[in-house]
Structures are given as structure tokens and as C-alpha cells.
Length: 142
Image (cartoon, rainbow, N blue to C red; front, top):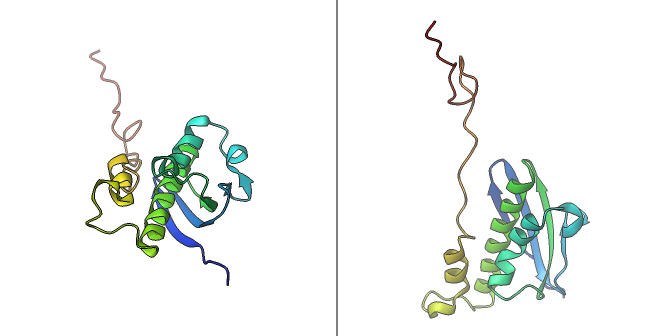
């Protein structure tokens, strides 16, 4: 019987990413495209790969991602969050990530890098009578 994939969800700004993690050769597919095709920016690609690289599991898993909403940076952040959560599920399933396992636990590594924290910052709405959310009209003395 085939091993079932580890699924998780990640969010950032208005983006939501669903990640399916299964044992494989290290390929990452985002919305039926390769990572390089979907994200032209190297920084976004690095952001997505970060949880895999800091846990030294970059070539252990095939990752299939569906992401929607937001822009490039928000989507990359959402995928990063989802991958980190899926790795945690994997570690828990194989019994590799116990609470008392010391400094080498996957949870501690991901937490220290900030991959498990949901970045809750959202765009502030524009207010009536203002140019932007906070920028008011220019004062004129005469």
C-alpha cells in the first residue's frame, strides 16, 4: 500500500496554500508548475525551500502545492508555513519529534527559524476622507 501524503495548510496575508508532502526525490510542484516556473524571483524560491533546507530534508520529499490569493510574496510565505507544518506532522508520525528530544528536534529548529509562526500582518483598510489608510490631506496655511 502506498504511503499517504502528509497534508497541511499555511497562510500569509490573503494567500492560502495547501501542501501535500510524500516521500520522493525532492521535486516541488506549485499549481501544476515547477517551483522555478511559478516563482520567477529567487527570493521567493529560497523562501519556499527554507524549511526543507534547515531540517536537511530537501531531497527526501516530493511536494505538491495548491496556492491561491494574494501576490508572490504572500504566496511564498504561505507555502513556507504549510511545508513547515507538514514536516512537523511527518516527524510526529515517525516518532522523530518528541518533546524531550533536545536541541535536534524538528519543532525547535523550525520554531527558531520562524517557519511555524503564522505572520498575522494584514493590509489596513483605507479610511474615508484620507488618501490611504493613514495618510491625510495636505495642510495648507493659505
